[in-house]
View 1 (cartoon, rainbow, N blue to C red):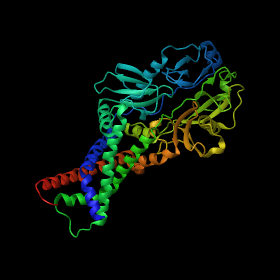
View 2: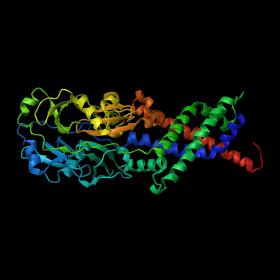
View 3: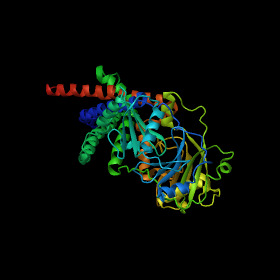
View 4: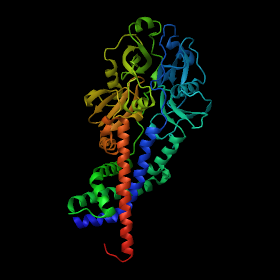
Length: 496
């Protein structure tokens, strides 16, 4: 075993060492980008006092606009006022209506995007461009999840730009020249995004060969540490390399095994975008005039949002979202960055009214979430194994989804998956199949080191960066030097 471990370690030294250098150095770019990249200046979405007592009845607005169905309908905060927002089709600009007159406001989706861009960045410079994006790109990759979005760029020396998602008044990401450069470097050298899509199989094979070499080299190195006992420390670089192995063997195993697992999982079972809007709502069935009874309905309740959704039985409902407390919320760039990754609930509980009769529903948010999950999966409540409200991001539902709170519903047979539904507009926010959960947990804990979450976001990033840098220098760098020295001696006719 000793002889085999030594031989295998030397055979894999060149490829494995190069792999550690490539992925170690490129991996360092991620905590750099997260820690020093641009952040939004305001965390909570915009809000305005909600008063529908003088608003036009929604049914009249829909009838005058010729709207019989829509994918989502809600009242949203705009620049100093509230507007009725209608999503007619998933990838088209949203339509907006004045609450008082019921008239449609042409081009408001772009105007809303500009308002959100200035609100979240607090930038006052002129706009350079406003782009409507319906497909993921290199600058806005699929990891961001949300589509369609607007990219709003400002006339600034740092090329500040923000992606905004008007359906939820959310910031989908902030970028500038620094982040674009770092992100490009990460994609090129960590994900190898420069490979043509039609040759993705070749990219997978090459990365598998390199990362697999690093993983096998790590295992053989651990075997050498266990099987070979020295009475005295080896001289020079060899001694330092061995000492580093004792301290870095476990981190090296974490990075290489989880990276290899991630690559194999995604090559066999590539991820499919899970975000899905509800089926079209029947806007002609809402005969109850919510606006006429607004004062009675809202009395004693701090209502912050109103949306129209549909339950599993096809019943159209008004969802009245209560405001969450914003006192003590994140303010500084560091607090906002941590809140974005950890998640802070920005809405309170909800009350549901039947849009046909105005009656209050007893089942509430939990009951509706269960019905929505059943509609998206096609499974009945008997298949549900667990259910809970998710108010913070974590390993199972991370910050990339940019929606909180959501309901997590765990399904057994025949679904074998966990789904996350947003009851605000009846959206399927994410879905994880049971066969994908092991890889997600591995990548979260062993690759991103989320087990260090108690140290805080900065502490976790610092520990991950130091671990990667130590591997690059003490394992990859010193190991490659030793390998080159050995090859030089062999070439000179010396026998190791």
